[in-house]
Image (spheres, each protein chain N blue to C red):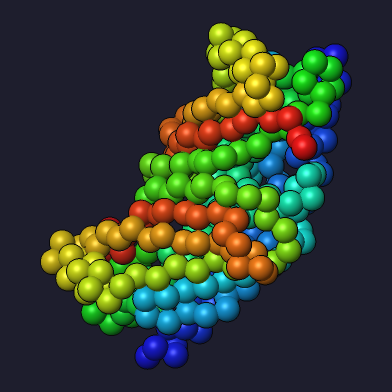
Length: 152
Length: 152
């Protein structure tokens, strides 16, 4: 099952044309963790650094990816979808070269979200993502509020 | 001068390939005001609604546009560039169809930012952007912190 979910998570990115246009590549996804990379092209702005909206995107999409790999959206949470409610991004320094974004959700939080979703039809979680350059320097960070929510 | 700056503002969008790939179109830009539109394609996600990162982008770029059209970055503020420091986006409802984003900076704020920039080399401002669908319903809103800052 975990393997299937990972494949689905990667396919979910491929199914959003603009994420594919950004060249975003999923590098790791497993229960409670997701990481992706963003290349400089075609994401550079007219100052020669990576555009804010592309940095936002590679961090934001980790929430959906992580949810797909963490919660059993085909089994006990069938009919649930991951949604983003709100997100804040802080820009720390100009982003040059390939940027890596990663985010993790601790196991107790996973259990709490799963229990909330089963009990109420909605499990909410806050995800912190860190964006680093090739030297490991933090270029930006995000705090996103997500839900896995029963549709309809 | 105002005309030149407007043309430059539009060119600035065109010079960020990923904004062009999103199909973002500047619809109005003048001192203290900027508006742009985002088409559904290629910005839809796998749920058939506009992707969060594209909504963020069409709102975020208004800060740079507005700065270019509002401050005399070729005259008294030559050598200054607009930067985004932080931004929060709140998603209100699924975005369908063409989305319009607009933001304005009141004249007294413009004067304050200009004076700060001249006095200290840095003028900071907070810009609220509203994103609406074709029916005028708010689909999202953003609060961004920007600076016009002297380089070097």
